[in-house]
Length: 638
Image 1 (cartoon, rainbow, N blue to C red):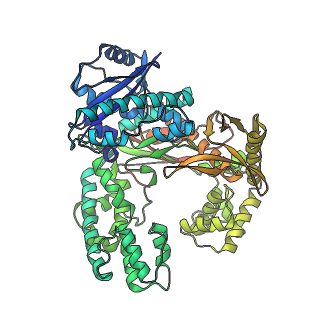
Image 2: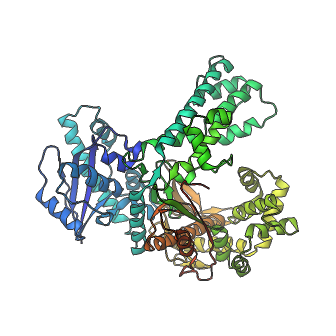
Image 3: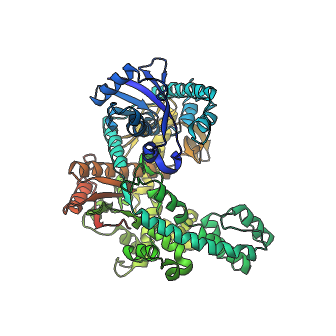
């Protein structure tokens, strides 16, 4: 099949990062400045739609792509496809609208190959000769922003930059691997879900934003008086830290965890406590999320699109969130009915009703602002304790599998072992929560000190001695899990030091071209680039690279993290299979969040379909018992 690499450069009033590709491409003031394209591996050519007629050959290729006889390759192909369909075709309406199947995404391939999602970074770490044009930031800024005047010199420079991007994309694509047929199917599903989007109650979101803006103004009004004019707004982190230091309170940052710890100090001056409390109230996730929840949805149907990133978690292949970031919405804290909560913002009573807790109420409102299409409901289902199941399944704990088959609660089982008495969900919710934290925390080789931190993050205070007891209890009750840690680490080290394929419990490791390859029991392969072996305290250790905060940093592959990566990757594969099954059953998926699937449908049998699709045994793990629970509501919840 003919493959044509393309890259668009555009000019717009809209901010792509703020509104996403769908809204950006559909904006009436977005234009295509140039399209660079390369047929096969030929030198890229440039077409400037504002000044030149459509090249006949490009039209032929587009018709071929619409018939399934050619594909366009691009970095982050969803952007190119949206620009083609919604921007370019505005001026050339006789061009065919192209489906996701007409595109191959080089970025998706790079992410699955363990490389960064940034073309610039992927080119650097892959070591290809073709690198991005360093003038790119300047040229895309002055040409791409409709507020700047265009010059011929900048337009010519932009065309050269666009051609160089195509060369770089092609070079990186030759170094990475194509997606397997299975992963290609999942990528296309991802594109359909992103195109489908999920509806946002935009009028209500605006009402919530108005309320917390008013609340923020009230808080900010108090700051100058409390700080003798040193701080005027709760967002002025540097000024707040400087003023706090003058009051003898020295903090490394004003992250939520740091502020929370500081507020627990008994020696905190009253004025410093008030300032930190204002910072805490104003720093909730609602403030950051509400603006994209208003900007991203299409005003024609209020649907927010492009919220998922295929293989966004490169180490495991899990989906990541984008734009409104549905993957990290906070859990409700006030336990208020969602319709009642939203109505309190819409009718203007929230500030009086919740007082200082209005910021918490706004955070609680984030999920319910996502809704079904009118006439439908959001049917969602969660895989039950999927990571706990997979860890114990990988370790070979048949006794745990028997427990799961009977419907027993693994968290109650763990709590019973810790407390030495029978724990049930109904009668002992606190003890069960302790058991849950132990099961979910200790499966990945967490020590006592780290467990203490993990428990605190889950609202449970334990002493270091108690943490040590809990860790020992887990390792004793599920004694095969420590063997799993050691076995996976030994296999990985052997692959890195001796070559060949080394396995433990169905997980295979190999070293290839400087990368650790991990083949999962599901058949999917994970790739971790930049492998190196270093001598540690107890022998050789394997290190690989990962992207974090824009940096290509080292990560130690010890037994616990190998277990975590294999477990979370397999949990993703279970979810992915369930999503494919649900789609084949005719129920449209609109979101996936960790171990949860969300659909937008009017079908009365949707809950049954979701549960059956998610719990039918996996072909690669027929002895892994799965469970899921489904609920239906107009508004999204937790």
